[in-house]
Image (cartoon, rainbow, N blue to C red; front, side):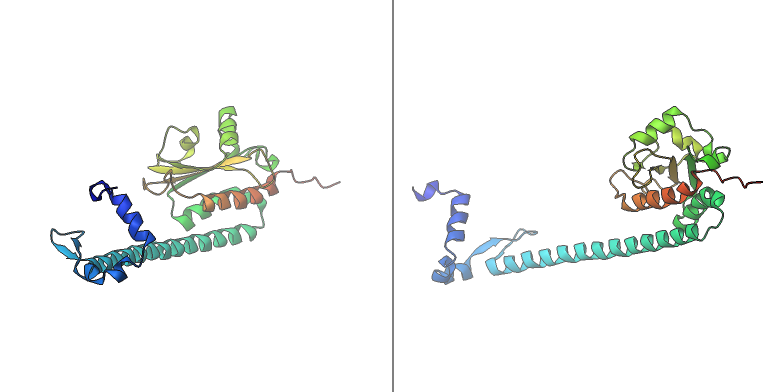
Length: 227
């Protein structure tokens, strides 16, 4: 192989396999000049390495800052969910739970419009929360295996909201251990970025579990007292 036939990969492989090369040719290492990454001038190999390390350090700082920010946001949401759960547990009248779910979620998460519809809950058959439920709504909920997050796309359930949202989340309320949903929860926001298609749904899944478990208290009618 002639010198002119060496490729950049060949040279890189040669240097990786022979780390003692620069020890044996220290004067080459000291005098070698390479292009500056952001300017037109040439700099020493040592200075180029320092710049690379600084860039990596800055990148790590940004990543760490992002992790801290996300952790703070997640902690805030977790605390909010805990307060919401405590409010539901403290509710003595099970018939107030649907309204409580809507009102508390709106207050705690600062959402302008929320809608809840349920079915197959005997104690809510004649309530406002059982209205406007048809076969297509039930089918949609059955096929919604994870929360929908994103823009309004003519979803039938969005008609329950008081105003058209810029973004929304739709949660099929499916209690743990159940295959069939018992309702739909629709969260609407004026912020187009509030609910996006690439967002995580862990907290929405938690809302599903808590709300569904609470609503199961309304599954069976209140037993009649014997005369």
